[in-house]
Amino acid sequence: MVYLLSEEASRPFAGLSDVSISEDIPVEGDISVPVGPSTRRDEEFSTLDEPVKETILRDLRAVGNKFIHVLYPKRSTALLRDWDLWGPLLLCVTLALLLQGGAADSDDQGGPQFAEVFVIIWFGSIIITLNSKLLGGTISFFQSLCVLGYCILPLTVAMAVCRIVLVGGSGTVSFAVRLVVVTASFGWSTFASTAFLTDSQPAERKALVVYPVFLFYFVIGWMILTFSPSQ
Amino acid sequence: AAVTMSAGSGNRNTNTEPWGSFDENLIQGGGAAVIDMENMDDTSGSSFEDMGEMHQRMKEEEEVTAEAAAAGDDGGEDDGGEDGEFLGMKGLKGQLGRQVADEVWQAGKRQASRAFNLYANIDILRPYFDVEPVQVRSRLIESMIPVRMINFPQKIAGELYGPLMLVFTLVAILLHGMKTSGTVIREGTLMGTAIGTCFGYWLGVSSFIYFLAYLVNAQITMLQTLSLLGYGLFGHCVVLLITYNIHFHFLFYVLWLLCGGLSTLRMVAALLSRTVGQTPRLLLCGTLSVLHMLFLFYLHFAYHKILEGLLDSLDGPNMAPIQRVARDVPELTLNATLRSLGTLLKTH
Image (cartoon, rainbow over all chains, first blue to last red; front, side, top):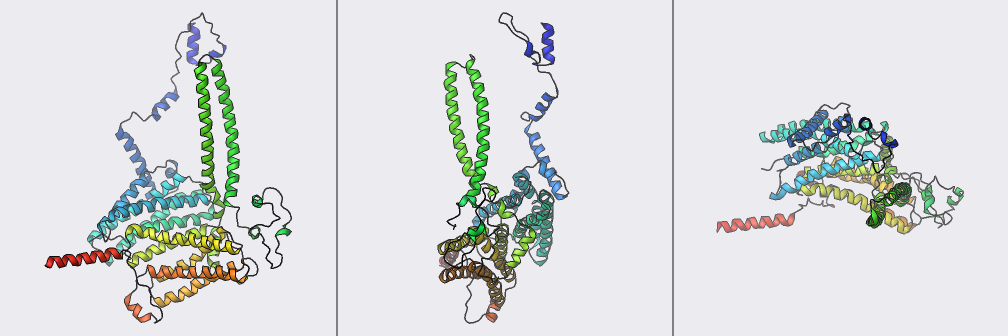
């Protein structure tokens, strides 16, 4: 009996096919699952027990990693493989907050401006994604949203720079500086996003996908350039 | 519109049953015979609902076979369970109730997914976006070149990529114009106004022209009107891009007549070639040209800052341009009167 149990312990359920249990022989023992690589993998995936700080830091690190990929756009699949929408949300909210307080004729301008930027960014991204899918792209819906959202980073940086420049004054010189900064960041954004998006398209159609992206970042860049703080 | 001899709408799909000869669809003189011209265009796709139905039927067959296989396995296991002593009589009733609920749920899910797949299936729109950049460029240029042939139906491309991009470009140009003119629309509604105007024009006027064409029995589909009007906006984009930056009124009038006129003539010629009869032609083409030209006129003047000096020197006596209208006029005047009342009271 002991011999049979140890055999079962090493190869679970292997001996059951030829074991016939009759009612008068009590069955005893324990079925122990062999400790192998499978349990270790399970423990790694269960992140329910880790402290909150670790979870947040891991997500922040992932977001930061993708920011770096946007700033130095090279052909890599990091943005596409582990897509997430935290970064786009962060950038969108930052940009919308920075664009608030523009020249307005009444006090309750804060609401519509924030919502307007938010809506433009998200609906613009959705439309571009739909367009690239309709043109035969192989990229998935959320991956495309992720890429477009992350590539707003240069424009957000440009907005921060513009705000700083505007503190100094809003004359022709500041306008020229802002124009250069916004144009550069707009070109950077477009280039970065096309580096990721056009890989999934058939070769002849790249121009068809790039144009709406160009238009999208152009509109955002235009909003940034024409931003003037209220007096 | 369909020939009485053709077997119905389902066979526009070319990879099913063989057709009769194409002789049925040749033009028989210039009489009042109703001929299905859609077969002559190689770019008109099958109707929206037909494609959706086909797609849905194929999917449903797969789903049903998958469900049958799964149900077969489940049924087998349940029987084995019931035979054993684990469930007992209560288990049997529970199983039945659960199966009924399951079936109701499946039926409901199938209905909902059918509706969803029919109307939210992106694949329905896929054939209308099947273009090459070269084609788009050539169509953009052709939209400014009227074609003289009006005795034989002109080919109208049935694609939506070009028109959609042109509408978005127009929105961007309008935004630029509104910003530089310092229009007093609040920021929140600036974008909404631009998008609403452009999309409203494109979709609304296309539907209206399609409706009129349906009334006078012109041979044109909704997709083709959308496409025709969309490409007609190319002229508008060019004119507005120039005149929002160079504020010469005379220049605007010249460009309005030239570019607006050319694109209108192109659309009118295409429509003329597909309509039979003097009055229908007049109605259709007159409506389209009036709406098209007036839209450009409206876009220029409603969102455009008029420089006073140029205005005095260039304008003729016949046309008084529309002044820039502040959007919240009642509020402004109210505020102004309140402020003046306030100062009046303060001084007393």
